[in-house]
Image 1 (cartoon, rainbow, N blue to C red):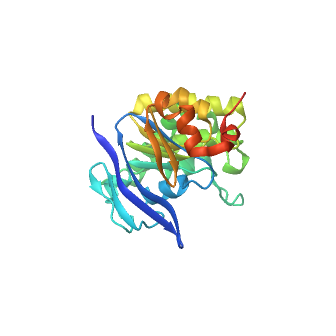
Image 2 (image 1 turned 90 degrees about the horizontal axis):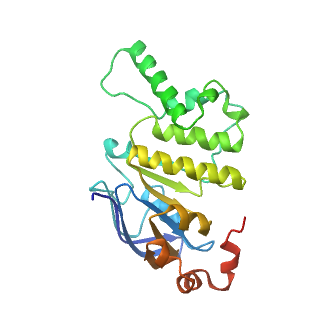
Image 3 (image 1 turned 45 degrees about the horizontal axis):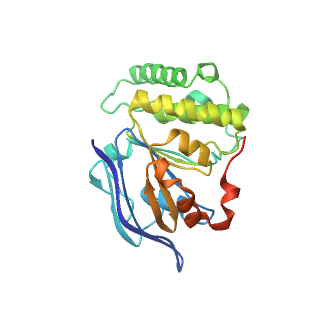
Length: 253
């Protein structure tokens, strides 16, 4: 099985504070891995360092076998195979952008110099991507008119409009109700299977992690444990990571 992401002894500082210390793990192709841990554990910092958004103090990151330098630089052909869904998708609602226009930003066809052909292929790709997330009816809507659940579907369509290998999510279903969150994860799992995605996601929903994920990384600045959900989500490991506030992170629906 191919290694899609390798992180070795990664440390990241926030000012004088060590937010992530000596973190190491690998992601194999086609797997879904969750990062869990209490607030302030360094989960978002870890993801942002992997994406090159934050600098790292030490350690090594490789994506598809390609080292990521300390400035976060990656060759374009690698970067195009990584998609990121943030916790909150913030945009200026005064910008008159449609769903089709947003998704088309994620599509490009290098080497083509025929604008009319580019437009036609791009539009077909956008339609196909929206169909895969059951959102074809949204194509001409403005972004400002979308509900929370519709926005999540459109962002997933952005991820599938061209081939990706690695999908990174920072609590992407945040803000959805239980029904919407359940539908989001069902769709995510379906797309993972269809497209062969490797997924790394931050989550506070331990029930979801147990049900959907292949591997769990339990983080509190450094890795407390990692492994299959049955092992990593043991009461002993969760208590070590969360302490007495563990009950705040268990979802009961």
